[in-house]
Length: 107
Image (cartoon, rainbow, N blue to C red; front, side, top):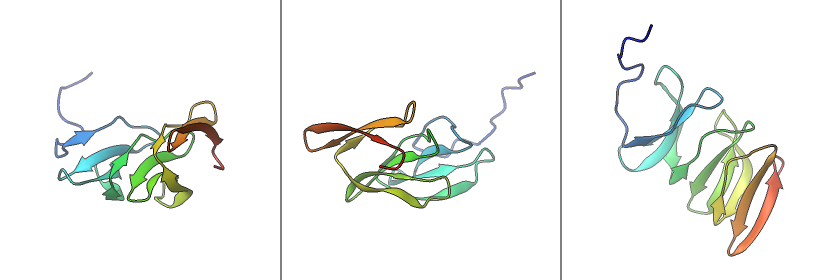
């Protein structure tokens, strides 16, 4: 039965739902990181923006553009896209400038 109690105390400017055990959170109104289901920081806040994990990768924005990270925070696909989506059915759409492309989880 649900009690209505917070599972994780509200402490973030913005947060998305959990996927693959992690949720993107906007920390201190400055940068994005990821928390686990206990609320502990799993990936340090360091990104300008972040999307939930999907297909084992999460889209994150850095000064160099959008790229993708693994659940341990390591870079899987180099930043450089001007826009990026989460993966769905093994593909994500990305833009370089005005050019739309689709990439797989290997980039």
